[in-house]
Length: 436
Ligand code: ASP
Ligand code: MG
Image (cartoon, rainbow, N blue to C red; front, side, top):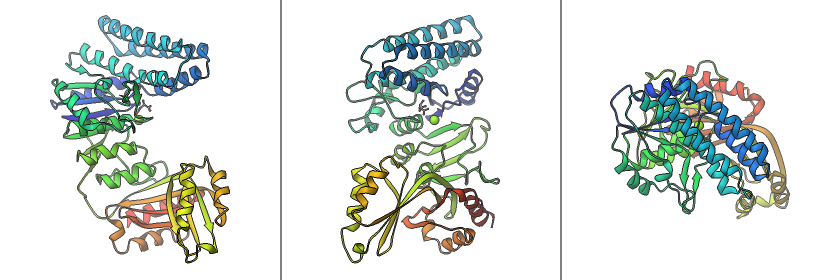
């Protein structure tokens, strides 16, 4: 069994849905096909939910009606036969009917909102399955709400999911929804925005699939940011640890949480391109292909905080006190460097920065630098490779570096720079690490 996951853009219009049907019927392998909502739909549902929570049902209903018009258009382009078109219309009548009923609930609450958000994936999968059927491709649609469950902590119940799902996989093609799930109270819930990748990984782990394929319009994970650096290339192979670092630090192609289930159950993840389906893409697995730098990524919007205090000298518990302040304001720290009298660290969520600064002032002199970028250099065991720092520092020798983090993970070396220098640094590192 192979898991095929297609995101919102890949099912974004009739043409693209047809392409997906071709891709999954190209060979005889058994597949579970996980679909996102049509691109833009979840955003619209979020908007509708916000209006209803603000008690503006009239505006919400207008949005629902305009969304319905978009879907009328979609099905008229998707289906050739009147029978298929009729089935598509019935699906739209049913689910848009349910959305309108929800919109009429006077005390529309968070639970109702989650039900509302689920319609995107419910619509895309139902409409797609009718397309498959009307083109003579046998397939079954299984609702993710019947097997995808999370526990009180919001963690997927992988063993349970496998037990429920495995006996149902008796067709060559099974279609299901990404993103949506049920919580312990049995209510409709979701795996957070962008969660369809996570769904695919959970399903792959739960049924011990051969491979999880994430299909997008990019030909794999690139070794640098293609928007900034000219000569980037897709990375052939990455370890799970490397992929996790990259998914977090900027490479938008894969949802960071989706690495975990696949890694735990050792299911390879392949990133594939709908535009160039014959390309190998990027394979993420347990084995490493080479012990060198594989990729460079950047994360913007970083704030650096420095706390300087002579009280830190020879004292213990100083760092604990500092970290506690960030913990208290639920703000996670990415990079940390220390000297004997100062500590610098970075955060990417500055919502509570002013409160944090007030608290930190009790421990020493606080300096804050905004508009910083973390440049992250990723590769298997690169921190154990001699000469690596020289290559990096030679490449950025003209650039002022604010912080360096080395040795924290064996797969990652991070530099903190002013965001204005990002393009220069990415290009300089590309020349220094890949071109030589
Ligand atoms: N449709 C959901 C979203 O837009 C889940 C996903 O696409 O991965 O966030
Ligand atoms: Mg997505």
